[in-house]
Length: 261
Image (cartoon, rainbow, N blue to C red; front, side):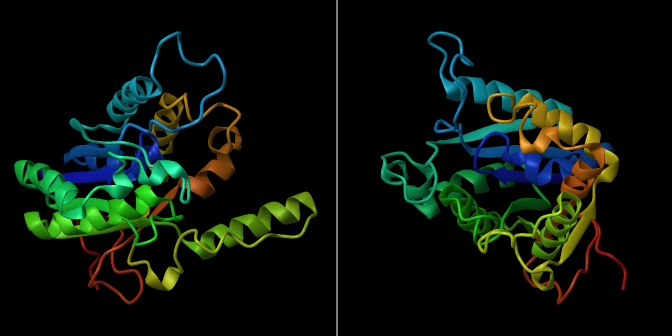
């Protein structure tokens, strides 16, 4: 048995980005540890969703624990930083925000967990945080440095295939009889940069259930849950990663075992 530590910025990021590989690792007998940098204090919720006096952060921690159980997580840790909000918002620079946290300080906290767990695998995000969110970019910086400090041998940067997104958007546009739009320039990475592609279609039931556990952020009417099964499988049935030093091209189809040449 090996241990995977999966590091994320906010509650719900884990199931969207890595829910499949988390459940896959669990079912294959590995230990899965979830570390979240913030409690997602600046997420948006519908009026009346929270009980009187209930803090969003409290609700999101409870949602994370519920999602973690679905995904087979053995340990959940929060680093204690505050959600920085979207790029360019005043909340980016508020005291305690993850965006303003010294990388060495945050990396030391994560490295301590990596050492405690003797982790073989760490997941973080690509260098643009997959879509440019400041906390996601910081997850990349902190995760990569923590792996150096702890000597974690396998570090996978979660990302998204731009070509896969474009193909899906073209297919939806054709069905709707409209012109296809290009994915945002800051979303995902070209397939040429991706080194690990993991098929997680066998675990989509768990991934979708984990998303539902984050009800404060992912409603039944949301893009994530409202799409039909076929669309959900296309959007979330594959998880992409970049592992420094691998490639060019895809060299791995699992985070624990290198694909034989």
